[in-house]
Structure formats: structure tokens, C-alpha cells
Length: 394
Ligand SMILES: Cc1cc2nc3c(=O)[nH]c(=O)nc-3n(C[C@H](O)[C@H](O)[C@H](O)COP(=O)(O)OP(=O)(O)OC[C@H]3O[C@@H](n4cnc5c(N)ncnc54)[C@H](O)[C@@H]3O)c2cc1C
Image (cartoon, rainbow, N blue to C red; front, side):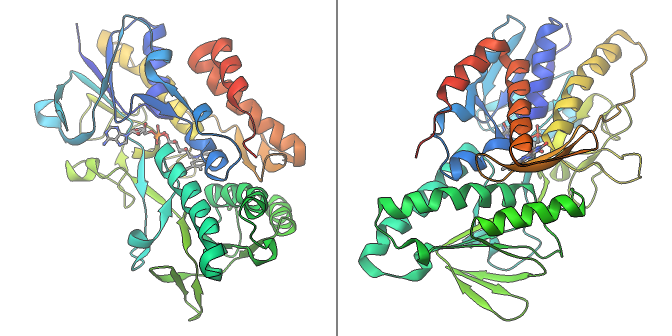
């Protein structure tokens, strides 16, 4: 029996594991945590909307079948020539590997950015953001330092905009909890490009900008961050902004293990794959999700998203089965469903299959995509369980 190893239990790796389980093919999945977290929703608990519990699910709750072996380990290296990967706790060998370790932050060489900014990329980092902001609001009473109430979010893509939308609703509640004057709160969203949400059309970008502005967010486009110091952001114009909370959402690259292992990668560190999602270097390794450089119809790599990772995870299992049986594999074709951005709990913007959606409609559609993922993982019972947990925390 061939040994199939899946690295990563995010959107790509877990989609593959769920399908392997349904197909009754034995596999081992290795992940840093014993749980899967809902990365696409992390802005919600980071921005105070709910408690953290609903945003993850134990892998053992999803992968219950005898086919699944779950291993908690942190992968430190890949040795493709020896068909093994090196973890913190030991080595893991394979006949076929599905690599789905996601991304790493991209700091674009901006001095001080890595050292002095918070990131939104896991359950732990979401908790860090929330407690850091709360600690500063709590400490304001003692020193009245205005930089404690100033929050800078770098990047106005999906993550930055969604986080600002949440924070704009949450901060007034935090202000009243700590008796902070809410007219002293400043939430600044800095973006180097001329527009926010580049994946949406101009009308939707304008709607999102209006919603954010009405919620009190200072959205500043064409503002390039050139340096970050402790509690200070410096812009290309020379302006310096003092803020105790600096959050970077401006870019991602692939997990560095691929380039370190000598895979043929694009400039963002993503391993180049063929039309079947196999690494161009090693046919026994499939690379999916944010780590994969798959060239789309326009000749450019497809942008990293959860919907892409999920579809790749699903497809890769068909190809793996074909490869094992010596049958022809199928080309991967991405079915773009659209993009939805929530801006706070009740409104959003986006497009779904070419149709524009705004306000409550977009927000409800985002909820529907959340439900779809939960049903895929654990059926209606998981959806019902999670829905009970999603109770507002303020
Ligand atoms: C706040 C936010 C909002 C987003 N919203 C959307 C959205 O609305 N729609 C959308 O399509 N996309 C969205 N994205 C992007 C989306 O989350 C990613 O594209 C998606 O998670 C990529 O899936 P993946 O399987 O490649 O990686 P991930 O989902 O990141 O999974 C990687 C897994 O590998 C594990 N791991 C990493 N390194 C190691 C290691 N060394 N050893 C062991 N395990 C490891 C991680 O813990 C994780 O479980 C959003 C991202 C963020 C941060």
C-alpha cells in the first residue's frame, strides 16, 4: 500500500484529507496544531466580534475514519530525493506527498516592519491583536498617551479591509469598557496602491471605501510605508505616525520550505506546478494552495485564496488516485466563484459569479460560504454546533 502524506490542515490540505477519507484511501496528515482554524474569518475574533472558540475545529472531529492518521508536528524541511520530510518531532516518509503548508508574510524589505508589526494569520495571532489593543485601551487611563488609541493597519486588500471593518465596530465598545473618549480613537488603513480591494471592480471599491469611511476608518491610499520603528510608521512623504498598534496585512509569499529544498519557485517562493498540480521537479509531490504557482488562463499565477486551495485539495485526490492506478490525470481548472469582503458584522461588498453584491446581501453570502465549508468538513451537525457558538462577545 502506497504511503500518502499530506502536509498542512488548512483549506487545501484539509479539503484533500476529507476527500481521501471519503474515497477510503489511507493517509497521514501532519499539521502544526491539532485543529484547523478558519483563516478567512480571523478578522472577526481579532476585531472583537466573537470569542475564539467557534473559529477552529479539532482535526479528530473531521477526520474520524480509519483511513486517517493525524500527526501533530511542525515541518522543518523536505528531502524530496529521500522521499521524506523532517519534523520537529521526527521524520515522516512518503510515496506521494501533498504539500499544503500555506504562506508566510511578505514584508517587501521594509525596514522594521517584521520586527514591529502584528500579523493576522492564525488563531494565536488573532488573539495577540485583540489583547494588544485591549491592553493599550486599558493602559490609556494611566498615561493618556494618544498613541495607545491609534491603530495603523497596513494593506487594504481583503484582510486589511475586513479587519478595519470589524475594529471600527468593536473599538467604541472597548472605549466605553475602559472609559476612553471615543473621539480620541484613530483607525488608519494605509495602502500603497491607488485603490483598495484590487480584486473588485471600481464601483465595489468605491462602495467599500464609503462604508469604511462612514464607520470612521481613515483610509489613505497612495501611502507607501518606508520604515517601521517601535510604535512608529514612516511614510514615503516623510510623515511619521505614532501608534502602539501596527498591523501588517500587505502581502504573502509561499512557506519558505519549498525554496529552501531547492524546488523551482516563482519570485514569491511558490513551487511551480504542472496542469495536474504536480511539482515540475518531482512528479510524486503535489503542491496546492498558497504554496503553489499555478498559471491561469491569463498566463499569470492564480492569486492565493481559500477557494483556490479548497478546489485544488479536492482535485489533487482524483489525480493522486489516477497516478496510483497508472491512469491519465485530469488538468486542474479553477472555477472562480467570486470574492466577498465583509465590512463589519452586517455589511459587505463583493461579486459572485459576475454579479455585484453589496450591504446585507453580500454579508449573507459570506455567511453562506462559511456554512458551505463547515458542511464540507463535518456535515450539518458541525454547522449546527458552530452556529450555536457564534454568539456576539460585545
Ligand atoms: C483574515 C483573512 C481573510 C481572508 N479571507 C479570504 C476570503 O474571504 N476568501 C478567500 O478565498 N481567501 C481568503 N483569505 C486567504 C486564505 O485564507 C488563504 O488563501 C488560504 O488559507 C490558503 O489555504 P492553504 O491551504 O494554502 O493554507 P492555509 O489555510 O494557511 O493552511 C496551512 C496549514 O499549514 C499549517 N502549517 C504551516 N506551516 C506549518 C509547518 N511548518 N508545519 C506544520 N504545519 C504547518 C498551518 O497551521 C495551516 O493549518 C483570507 C486570509 C486572511 C488572513
